[in-house]
Image (cartoon, rainbow, N blue to C red):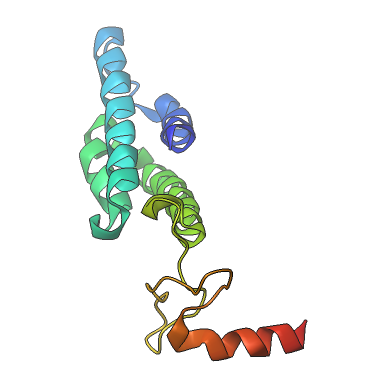
Length: 139
């Protein structure tokens, strides 16, 4: 997650309010980095219960930028956090966040990923094992 927080920081550090003195700009940069890393560590620690991390990060850092840069800051935050969330979702599907336990590859009727553990040596849980027969026929 370190690379995502640093990528957001690098894309935003030069947009910090240029009309402040050098000392204040340095403080703003440190605060920006701290907020980015705090958001990413919280996202990595609890990905299921961190609603709208991009909005949270933007609200925390927007005061460091002039009004003319707010749209660019919001875009950079949305893209950076979106990339981090996609990576976390990929890791969750692979089972990296659940102690190495994989999850069923099926989706529920509501479009959410199935949360059950697949059968040993299989990709699907008992409720969705019929999908494995279809995927092997298609291949």
